Image 1: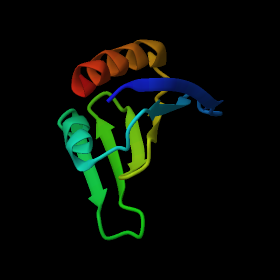
Image 2 (image 1 turned 90 degrees about the vertical axis):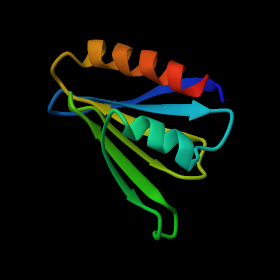
Image 3 (image 1 turned 120 degrees about the vertical axis):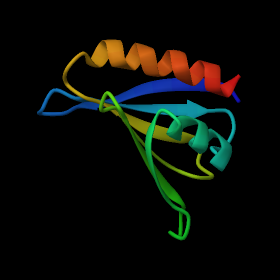
Image 4 (image 1 turned 180 degrees about the vertical axis):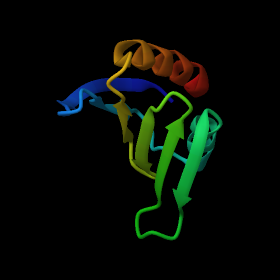
Length: 96
């Protein structure tokens, strides 16, 4: 799996930033579980489109659908650039 694009979606009023991460393959449960190791995983496999949400210890939120080729990440206001860098470093290790 390869990360093909990172697109900034918006800045929120509270100072957090939202980015869309796109891949060359569909997201599966394996990647979701790897991401979930870094925080609290909420998974709803019985939804018509299986939804997951992960909240890391430092407040980063990952939201996505199993079978899509992208997910959204919300970086909290405090140290959001540093948190984004750390998230991307860990993500690259997971998708190798």
